[in-house]
Length: 142
Image 1 (cartoon, rainbow, N blue to C red):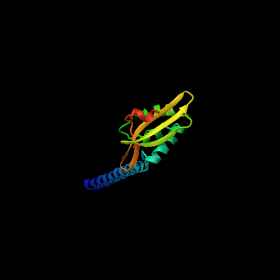
Image 2: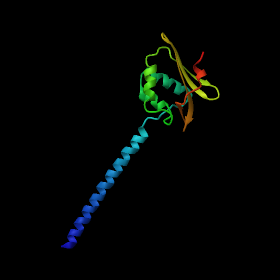
Image 3: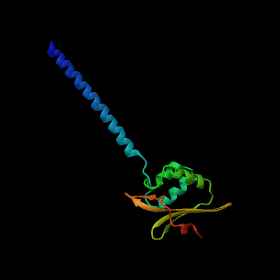
Image 4: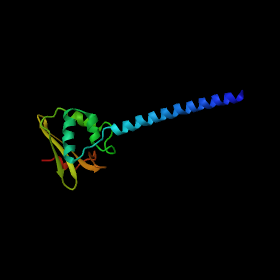
């Protein structure tokens, strides 16, 4: 009689382990798919980065703007402030400027005066990002 109970418990234990294993594999599959399909930050080249910044600001998309900054340089609300400043500004000129370093410079003439922002750009793991570290002030003069 006790032998039969042992076999039933063993069968229950195997079933439980199979359920736990299946749940773990399903969870790992979901995590792997999320990582593989997550949008990458930055862009493939400085020129694509320039175009992506203009497009993201023109469409007032702070999430997309944030992804163009290297994650170690821009806080979570940095992009929101940029979108507030640049959304709806007509005639934005965006240029990659080469000096001692590469910079992205945005400028525009508005009825209230001139707007200008500049950021260093750099490469990380084959992707190009903006760096929220302040660029030299003279990039926006003249």
